[in-house]
Amino acid sequence: MNSGISQPAVHSLVAEYLEGGVSRRQFVKGALALGLGMTAIGSLLAACTSASNGQSATPKQGGTLKEGYDLDFSRLDPINTNWYDPAFYAVYESLVTNDAQGNYVPQIASSWKVASDGLSVTFKIRSGLKFQSGATLDAAAIKAVYDGIADPKNGSPLGSVWVPVASTEAPDPTTLIIKLKHPYFDLFNIVKTGYWDIVNMAFRTQLGDKYGQQGVDGSGPFKLTEWVPGSHTSVKRWESYPGTGSPFIQNKGKPYLDGINWLTILDAPQRAIQIQNGEIDTLRGPAFQDITRLQADKNLTVTQLKEWSGYFFTLNFGRTDLGFDDVNVRQALSHAVDRAGIVKALLFTHGEPLYGPITSADKSYTKDVEQFNQFDVGKSKSMLSAAGWKAGSDGILTKNGVRFAFEMIIQAESFNQQLGSVLQAQLKTVGVDLKVTSLDRGTFFNRAFAIPDSLMFFYLWPVPIDVVTLFVNSANAHGKGPNWSNAVIPQMDQAIAAWQSAASEAELIAAGKKFQLAVAEQLPFVPVINRDAFWVSRQNVHGWHPDQWNLYPYYNDVWLG
Image 1 (tube, rainbow, N blue to C red):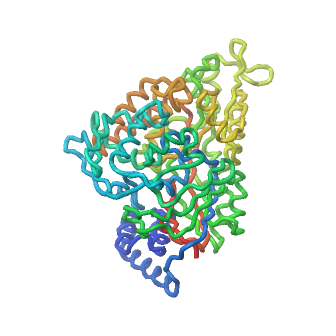
Image 2: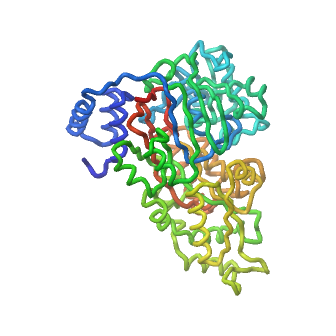
Image 3: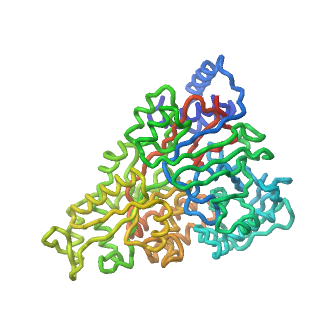
């Protein structure tokens, strides 16, 4: 096989074909897209046929899937949550989604048409749909969600990416029209995400702050039964689920599983232990030092994907006494970070240094960002000295009687704590005293929106520039959103405006490159590393297919053998 072809992607495609997740024709199309020749494809198909002989492909009804998760759980409210977790893919649906090849395909919408001038998109909505409560899910219900996102009083963390939308209209139950202020090619990337999942707004208003915790009302194949932060989230099959509109999902009826139980496992080594012992059936995010062992376990299937997201840390521009408002100081601290060393030591090479705001998984990624933020302790010290910082008796820099000392908050999880300790040690080499404080998820986000000195964050988003704009847009500074550095940089705002007004994919990619270079140089936050994404399943799990284009797998087809 060609060494340039992604072996994990091929293995994932083969597994999906064996499980019935893609047809023979789709398999050939996917294999060609990966760069395989027809001879190699024929050999793979023959091997798949041989492997499936004598094996039952008949799904079984019943059972509860136990899935390990490497984070704590956020409330299941698309409009006002810090994060969307795997359960969103079970209890909610969106207008559209992506198939395994990255194509936009129907979910709640059955079709759509973009106006010739690019100023509106008309979606046809599947008729006869209901929310889990029995309430009608039609174009008016979807309009209510989108209007809610646009209303700042509802606290959507992503409201600013909806700014190009002029209005949403529902002229009849099966027609939804999104009107735009200007062409917005990125619109489909937005509405397919968890933050634009369709929720019954009347039920949400009825529950108030308890929505997403004590109850939800979506249209997905499972209903929420329990949400316990720090422990688990559980769902059960919605017996009245009408079936999916997504063509890549094979099961067109209600799900096979009785339910799903997601377990938060914050102690990284425990994740591998629990799936090897059979305590859980599937897993997201094993510890990187355990991956080789898991790959060698014949009872397991390990899926490796490129990760869209990366780790970064913020520097509060309000700390003018530390010079965080000075790009030279921010660059100096960035030069103190040995990104390649972190990838080797903590990721066991399962990742890459991050020199700009997004990772190489994205089609608009530009290697030009790699001219910035290279590891150079000598340059870091020189730049800090030029900014007026001098070493004190204890080796920590001082200026105007102020020690170069600040706090970084992180979420309590093993890898976060390891990375925080490494950053602490690396900054110490240039005379900076960093205190790392580990917090539970809820406390972390409360502190984050109060704008601390610094925080470390791993964002998670399938089109990363969309979410990164939130962290750097001046409109989100000063407590108005997740611009946790309070950064106000004109180059950022200009780059965001170009991204949000792109009328074609070519314009979007060009604007994305401009944005990346501006972030890499101006550093509204400091990029650190990108990790590979790993998913693990036991051999008794069928129809469970993590893919490159969706953050989490869909559970309609999953059954336990």
